[in-house]
Amino acid sequence: VVMGPAPYASASMVFPYGEGARFVVDNYLAGGTDAVVALYDDIPSSTRRVLSAAGAEEPAGGWTEALGAIDESQLPAGFAVVTEDSLGAWLFQVFLSRFELAEAGSRWPLALRGDSFVALSDGADVVGLWALRFAPGDAAAAQALLSGLGDGLRVELRGGTDVLVFGGADATLLERFATDFAWPPPQGTAGGASASRLPPRLRS
Image (tube, rainbow, N blue to C red; front, top):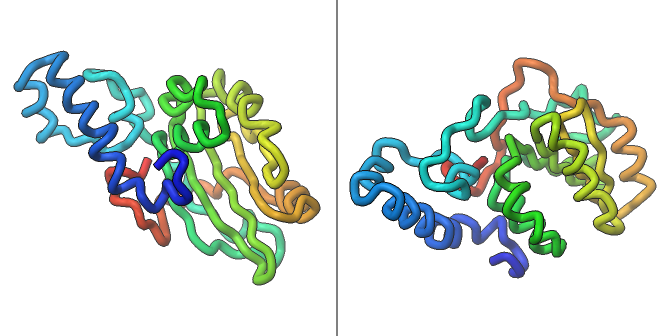
């Protein structure tokens, strides 16, 4: 799935058996049968938790943080949201592997506090945006890691915590879009997917 054409589409089939099985075994090795039985009362709600060590404590902000839904007031004139989803720590790990940044794979997926992937269009062109939230001390390093990945991507740090990865075929359009795009979403907007294809437990 890491090198396949569509990790997003196959995640729900692969992740539970690959990473999920390892998570259950790690809990068994750490606490025996009781630790595995306890998982039924505390089923992981995020891939970040499953990727963490058995018994890892929930971060102060929760396993995932909602970034808020994109509002049309943020967008350059003429653009509208096509679809919006949260991809989560494991698909971020897959992304790093596909760009041969796997050496960072063990640290950065666990550092990802929340994300929002959005496809936007003005009817002729499409821009992809992946907003990634990190702790203030990690965000600049994450931006440096993701910068220079090649043509078609633009990486910016906004607000000290959020790394925005813009993607598109037209470099000029991408630069103009990123310059005119306002971030963060207005307060009070809820995070979540408008057209999600991932089960809820894989969304984070």
